[in-house]
Length: 480
Image (cartoon, rainbow, N blue to C red):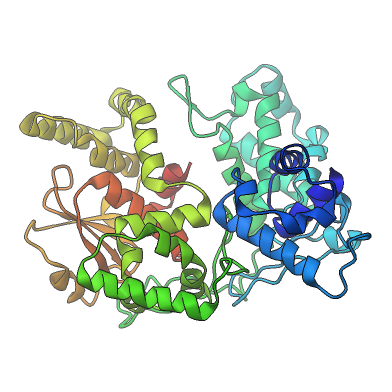
C-alpha cells in the first residue's frame, strides 16, 4: 500500500494523508491493483472520489512513466513516503515543474506549497516556552488576553521556523487544529455558543501572518496591484499567492487535448458568447489550464481577459473557475453560511452596544418593512461587519444611481482599481449590481446580492489580487 500511496503523492503532493490512504485502499481492494506496475491500466472511472484535474494528472503521469524507455515494471522508480516531494512554485513563475524526489536535506526547506503535512502532526508544540500567565489561563480554561496571545504566536512561529523556514498553510493548519483541540475553551472561535468556521481559523490566520511577515523580503516584494487612483492604465499582475489553492497552475493538459485544441475551444466559447448561447460548463472546465496561463503566465490585463474569456466574468464562469482553483463553490458556500449563521451574527450585532452599528440596524429594519421581506438583511450584514471592524463600506460597495450604466463607470478615470461592487440604487434595496475590477466593469447585470458578493470574493483568488487595504478584516471574516 505504501508504494501505491507514494505513487499518488509523487503526482499530487498536497493531498492529505487520509485521502491518499483512501485512494490507495480503493485501488488495491476495489480495482484490483497489485502494485505500482498496474497503475498504467487505471481509467478515469476508477477514481470517482477525485476531482477531474487530479484524475487527469495521475493517469497521464502513470501512463507516461509506463511508456518511458527507462521504465522497468519489475522495479518502478517510485519514492518512498519519507522522500515525498512537491513542485517548487514561484508566485511569478510561468510554469510549474513536475514533482521529483528530493533528498532529506532538501526536504527541510519546503516551499510554501509543500505537502509535508506529517511533520506538523508530530511537531512538539513548545508549551514550556510560553509564559506562565498564559499557561495558567489555559489550565483554567479561560480565553487569554490579546497581548498573551500575540506573545504565544511570536514564540510559536519562531520555534516552527527553526525546523521549517517556510511552512505551508497545510502544516500551520495542522498545528492550529492541535492547539485548539487541546484547549478549546481558550482558543476555539465561538460566537453566541456557535462555532465560527472551522473553529481554529483566527489562530491559523495569526500564525500564518506572523510566519509570512518574518519571511517577507521588503526589498524584493512587488505589490500585486497598484492602489494609486491616478494610475492611467491597469498594471499587470506581478505575484500570486498559492495558499489555499488546490490547482493553482495545472501542469498537465486534459487527456486527448493539446494547447492548440484548447485554444480552438476558447474561440468557440468567444463565438458562443457573442451569439448569446447559454454558459458551457464543460468547455470552461476543459479550458481551465489555459485560463490560468492567461492570468498567471501571460498576465493579461482585466480588459484583455474580458475580451479573451467573456464567460469567465459571468457568475457561473467565475464561480466555476474559483471552484477548480480552491475546491468549493463560493456562492453555495455563502448561501449555506448565511442560512446557518446569518441570524446568529445579526443577533450578535443587535445585542452590541456599538453606536456605529445602530444607524445601519435601523435602516435594515426600515427597508425590511418597506419591501415586506428579509432581503435587506444580507447586504446589511456586510455593512455591519465592515462598521464593526472599523472599515469603510465604499471600499467594497459603491452606491450609485439606479440608472447607472457600465459605460458611465468606465468613463471615471479615477475609479477604484481593486474589486468593488456597485449598487445600482440603495445598498440595502438594490435589485441590480455591477462588479468592477481595475476600474473596468466586468459584470453589469447581477440580480442577487449573494451572487455579486460571491463574484467579488472569487475575483481576489482567481486573478491574484491582494485584499483591499480598507476591507482586509471583513474579507478575512468572509474567507473563514
